[in-house]
Length: 433
Image (tube, rainbow, N blue to C red; front, side, top):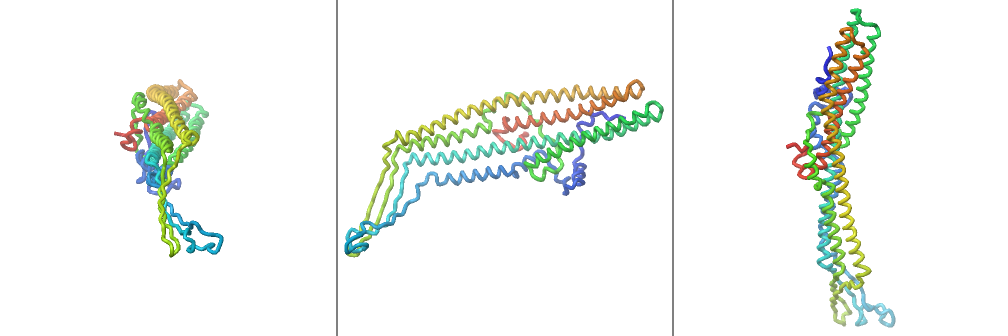
């Protein structure tokens, strides 16, 4: 009996069976109850990834830094002695000379209102910039987690097909031995099933290595839960080129330029406010000897920005140049992502066509070829070598179908989390409606 690979390729092992294998491998724990679905992986990635915790701390830092942005500078306390004699009979005396005064004063600086408003605007822009950067990082984490989960899911589906092929090969070997025992074959034919079994085991070893690599990639984002068996499947997002292109301007890496622009605009305004004078108020109490009356002092000072050509104007020009550079950088990033979108969408289309061709044409042809070769061999009209070759081609076709589907879903995840509506609205983790 030959089990058609078309019936094998979509089969995946029950979760608990995989869990038993994990326990036997030394991964203790009740993993049947701890299976990892696609949405579970995304939730864990958002809550467990250290980089997002670091980004959250950056937002808190920016918010705290924004609190004092518009406040006045701290007042200054001044202590001093005025007119202390250093010669004559009254030298170093604090009380005998009528001009000697012990002074205590308080000074407060008042930056002009335009400068303080600009500092507040810059601080708020930095908060928005930190939040936009966190959004970029969050979407990148979700994208990479989705890609890692899909990669592991694909390789485990391939391993499931290998498990079925091992049983099929045992049936094939029994058929060969029965044919030889019936005098319809030669002794050399008994070697072919064992060679095929070795080839299947080599494929299993390769897939086992890829599975461990996929688990390690997933563990980067979700932690130890990456060792748990997978449950369910990833969403199959609809990918529409026009919709993706329409959402291109809302790409997270482009939206971060808006708060950056607000920060630079505020810095330009602060530099321009440098042309307006700041001022300061100083109050002082002056204590003299007991035979003299005490005094008070009020002092107002003003900045005199009279050399703007060599001081304020260059600073304004520097901030304006940075603002122009930001606009050019945004245009460059927009073009880069437009090119990336076209490249990724073309690759997605290629993979979609390859999956359809592999499932609907190449895999059925491989099944048919293997069935015809088997019938010819059983009827004594075909060679065992032809049958073995046809079986190997069928194995390759089945594994390739799974691999191509996994690549297509990975590319869909990249497009979805980078350019899709989810990148703007974030209705839920997986983006399913």
